[in-house]
Amino acid sequence: MRRAFRWRLRIVSGAIVLLALLLVVRLYFVQIVHAQEYSLRAERQYVSSSQQLYDRGSILFTRKDGAYLSAATVADGFLIAIDPEMLKDKDAAYQAIVAVEPSINHDAFYASASKTTDPYEVITHHVSDEAGRALDVKNIPGIIVERERWRVYPAGAEGAQTIGFTGYNNDGVTISGRYGLERYYDSVLQEPGNGVFGNFFAELFANLDNVVVDASATREGDVITSIEPIVQEKLDQDLKAVNTQYSSQLTGGIIMDPSTGQIIAMDTYPSFDANNFKDANVDVFDNPLVSSRYEFGSIFKILTMTTGLDTGAIQPDSTYNDTGCIEVNKSRICNYDLAARGVIPMQQILSQSLNVGASYIATKVGHDNFRKYFTNLDLGQKTGIDLPSEISGNIANLNSPRDVEYDTASFGQGIATTPVETIRALSAVANHGAIVTPHIATAIRLQSGVVKTLTYPGPIQVFKPQSTDEVTKMLTYVVDNNLANGKDKIPEMSVAAKTGTAQIAGPDGKYIPGAVYFHSFFGYFPATEPKFTILLYTVKPQGVEYASGTLTATFIDMTHFLINYYDVPPDRATYTQ
Image (cartoon, rainbow, N blue to C red; front, side, top):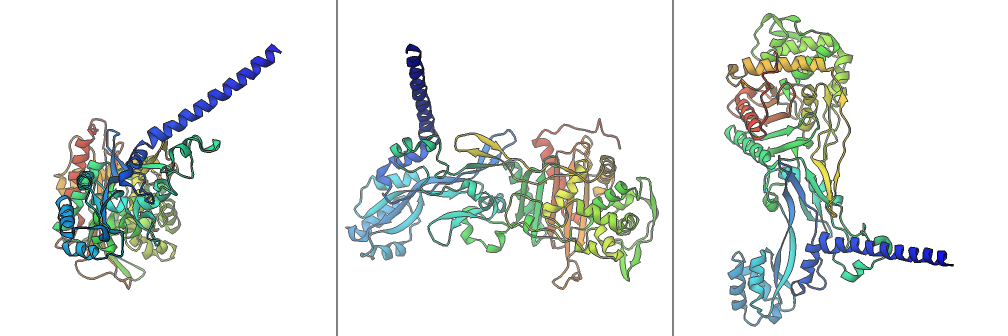
């Protein structure tokens, strides 16, 4: 009997402890995790009974030291409204409002104040906390001061096409993500239903299955990205400088970790300020880095050379007779200067950017192998990057039986790829032959504070490491000896790079005559074990024909910046050309 009593006592005690534990956990969520939201609700003089305060998770940049910096967050403040019938003195009311919010339009205010049949006319939104409180304490009849929350983007135009923005849906009430990460991760960031703004005791003593957390009433959390804010700022400055100097149509860039696919910075110019997107041209909202495709030109010679070595069609010490121009399927293919070089080694194809040399490699490789390697690099496929509206490139010409399509593709013409697709393929050379999945978000920080790491597909080996190592040596030689005649060589750091200049096709598919070009630049460092790959491009620059003139200085400047900012140690002591 006594033993049975002890068992009952233990069961009851255990149940009490379990219930207490559940209540403690629930209190943690209510009082700690959601403390700010309940605090706002506690200010009942500022919140109408029907008002639903806006809430949404943050998008966070990650500094090099691991600290987070808000790229998109929610600001707290007030809206000011009036009840025209209750206004005793319109002039005094106007002066009181203007004293704390000078931007109020005189005519618009008096137009609202004249609507005596409407008890609620909003005068302005997004009033600062200080200004809203200052107006409220005046207690002017007819003036309504209510709590409000809204989306803000501390970085403004920096990374705006990547971050995106929020906007009202067709119902004019609910808000969701539009463009960029805001749209892609909308289900993670969005606060559905009534969120955490229910009754405190109802929250506390909800059904047992909701004691810990009510999944149907709360968003998942904040999106943590690999975007480094200082690097992003530097990239934006450089893109604007290039675009302005050469009056380009558009200039873009991506900086990526080739071993993980994490995007460190990405943007195009012109862009827009996410805090004032209503004033921007809608054309700049789409992100050309994932939604536009281009013929990238000679930086594709990197892939052609690697394919040639990987298949055994050529060797590093192979030579060929460069005749300056060749005829293929009744089409003429020439070097940029039409000049013949005679019998020269493979290195010169990259050093002098020779189209005839790239065509030679494509012919040696053969149609099937050439197509197989470019397909294995996922060219012509979406990368799976976590951004909306990504399109795939177009390499349909590689299904043709004609030699000329492969010859032109060997130097980046006749096939078109997106910038993110391009950096993914080219980064395989930096990553010892493996392609990775480019991505921006690295983790989700749950409302509980727990950080959930995101996973992406693993690397896919396309080239043999020895093949990419040989090409890396060739590209390092280009920087040390040919780029700006060797003036941009960094003695303590091996840097591999290649420029690209491509003709631009018109709507009819024919190349536009005259000085209309697409310039590109791809490089990485340290060449021995790359930490960064950099892709730059500018569309229709004016007054300069070759990419070496528009993008070399920017690439070298960015390389020096990254070396210094990340304290990248020198590698020349261990690097052998």
